Image 1 (tube, protein in one colour):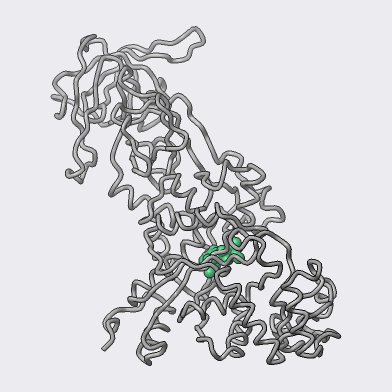
Image 2 (cartoon, protein in one colour):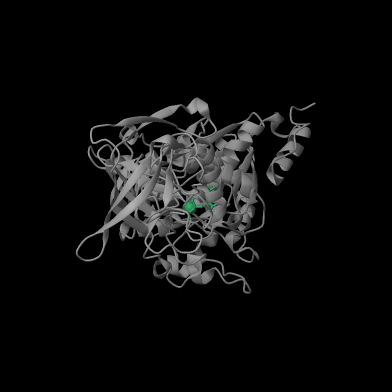
Length: 555
Ligand code: ATP
Ligand code: MG
């Protein structure tokens, strides 16, 4: 009996693998890989693939490799590789092996020779443009290249000379000899090697020919003993080529390619090329800008690995393309932070409140729980003193209906502290409210006032003890749900995706705020320290998500 007999498979891919294990396919082994091209930072779409591939390895006690698909040196870099490794680890996964397609360049070359020797590949002198014209269309078959029937000996000679650097870039390509009339255009003698003089970040100038993706991918999978090669739906039409290459190379194992629907997330973009454009053209501040759907951006915004894994699980794995609402991702982080974020108080738009009947010298050190339900998370000291700050909009001169906060002559409770009453409103020469004169009821600490009900509770900080902070409020990066469908996705950028509040004040305990620790600023939202931009004397906090769906404001 297999260990998985009593488990419900997580998705259709797990079902396939469960079935394969029952048949004892691959000697009962399960090996997957996550194969990014290091041409950008990973995004939330990649997270789906990572969770799927590594998740399957865990589910079936198999292995998952991280493999860099580094066959396009002009777009790739070591920085991207390092960011990818960091992001996969941060998400909580460990690869069995770390490989690069470039590790296999010599073997790939050898297999190309094998194909040529079998009469299954030829060197073609048609230009890229001619090859395109010869390829035909969906309704018309392609045309054979005049070079298609070059002799094996000539092909071998030319291919070796391609490698030796005798020809200019683009002068020849090596093509698989399959079927120019195939209804699948990918099978119409696809190029498998091209001449390209670019420095490769790992192999330097060793090669001036580079293998193409489709040819490289299946062989890399086979070399690593991958059993299930999971990729997104757009590769369904490439599967016949994947299988063809491996069928011609019988010494290699033959992994099974399985396709699933890629993640499409509303109000954002999941394409490295377009994300790269946002970065290069400075529409955002970098790959880790908290508005970016990159793992690095989500991390800087305060998303946790758990929330992202939870999101990937929730959206499921199917063969149907569909759009996922941003609300799903926000729900996942809210769930996590509601349970785990430490509570704190921050005043975004301070209004000075002087408590006239409180002593000038006294500071009361209140002990307030870090989490209302989880007492094991401890308490912190919140100093209370004569002058405090509250949010400007927690006071109303002319209160709207049902306003439960502070009004002139009215009372409100300060969270974790006393009930105060507003006695007088002080304005400047322009009529702007600059201060409230209040009094506190000493008999209301931790208990209700006698004989009257005070409904409202507001947050506050002590003026002299609080710390200056910059608060960054993020909104969606795009104005429309599907920016990808716009003629120019840049036109759909939300001009108000970042609001910076430079003169907020946060409670004193946040001097110890750590990166990647979530805080719930009471009544305001979930926040985290922006470590890169915080300096002594000026903390910066990023809003991760609002407290409630659709709510961006204070209440
Ligand atoms: P991009 O268009 O963003 O560059 P890609 O598919 O070209 O994406 P790769 O680096 O080739 O990026 O992707 C590595 C793996 O991640 C592939 O197996 C790919 O199928 C998967 N992947 C990429 N984008 C998504 C997505 N939106 N949803 C699910 N899986 C994805
Ligand atoms: Mg790609």
